[in-house]
Image (cartoon, rainbow, N blue to C red; front, side):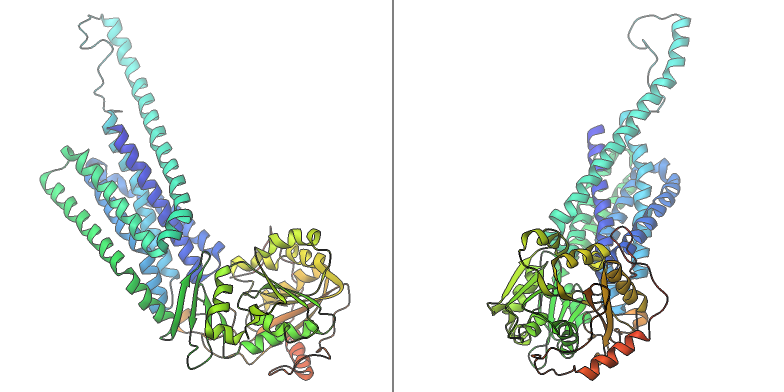
Length: 551
């Protein structure tokens, strides 16, 4: 009996870790700040596992039926957790409390598995049952009183050794199962099935393994009533999971429309993120990446003009754009006849592909990626820049950092002192570095941390901002704030113009600057004054080992 019990321990451990990783991944996607979400999920779940272990003491006398019910509950709650979390985000606008609730529930059930499994595996092996015969008993060989006494002294030690071996086997199967689940989630379940279906399939595997063990191996420990109850519960859980799997596409479409509105035109999952395009038929398109509005067609010109054109006031023959897979920063650079080479370093090929082929986005970016001056590199910008200084014989005149808000955790390393130091290595001595640094008015701490980080990397900085941001959820590149049932975005964009050395660059426009819709010399001077008014105490820089940006 030991092998089927250990096999189920292996499967249940793998399923439990998949639920855990699913909560972390989806919470990071929906809420942002993956470090915080991982910390909340893991700490709450570990605490709840301790609570579950204590609560399971009451079930050890009926370990078989208790384990079967625990696995059925875990399969149902864990399998449906992704659906519930996404539904809360889509229709209620808040999912933090749902994350905590599911972490607690799943943790309690996983914690209850351990003592129940111990009881079951000891029962399967006979460890600690006290039924092991004394040495020589039943063998037909007579033993004297001294031998019987020694056998009684040795029996507890043998039972303890057997129990220790049982515990070792249990935890070995548990840890190996966790390893397999941890690897299966990112490499198999997520790319093949997605977050929602992956969780549902994991729940089905969980309930089949747990219910099958109890109903097959430990069927003699069940009364007829318990057996009927377990069969009914397991069949019901499987029916719920199967129904949800069949309807998951309809649910995802309805939830997506609840989040993005009725104008969804394109929704694709790349290898890295979900990309959604809305509008575009009767008005300008909006581009969402992982639920965050990256481009609002109504006001993106204010953002991209303010980001690009102050940096072009100087030599601008060779330009590097970090991010910018939508092609809009490249569009602004290509308006300068003197820009002969534009390199775009983008992590996700799917975004560039959509920017090339979607009619609305391609029109918005003026077919920038068809221009022969543009070269696209698909790479992590940090790793690419680490080798760029050695590969490149020439340096860049302008570097433009067109990245999401630094408060979004995947962007944090690209706002570190180390990354800015890499940028300094590929800039010419007269080069300019333009950085989108988040909102000045809504998140001044984050903005001025970027400023401190640039200065720590050897740059002199000139802060400025761009106002006129469209109110509401269509609020430009930063993450929207969906708290308290409201949809609100930051009120402005903050930028920093950095140059190597100790003297800040003058804000202005190049002599060959094209005609702009929202930007002028007077506009830039006012933008600089607005930003300076928010300056506070000196802040420490952000580094790879000590990130200082909040979510």
